[in-house]
Image (cartoon, rainbow, N blue to C red; front, side, top):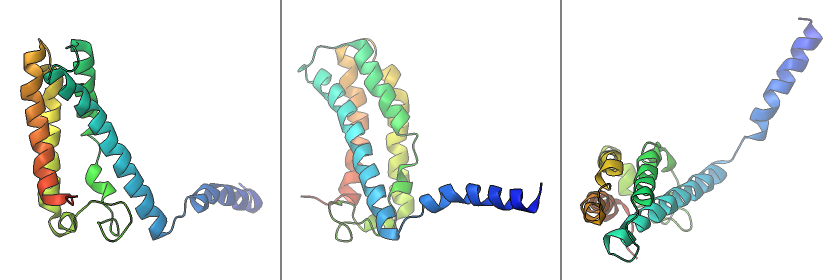
Length: 155
């Protein structure tokens, strides 16, 4: 490869990286928006299961399994990585994340692991009838509550 071709290659290869450079504030805002989207997806799927458990929605094994499978997939994402410095409540607008997340990262990660464990078994747990949705939902909701009690600002 000639020197000119090497220089051209390096210039083109560096261009995408330059386009993705972000300030700390932009990275924090992106992380917060991703967290909000993530929590919304959890909420939608939990809502489907909750409506079935309460009898507000007719039990549909396919829909229940899909919601539970979605939850299992979502909990395989590295969510703690979305809690970047500068995104606690009071540091950035529209955040409910308590500073305890950064003060106790191992506890935060452990609580998320509890949610992931509950979600992993939920696709099979919700099969077989409406009566199976409630207990699966209690496990999922309990894991959510444990984390929110310690790490989410109460409104």
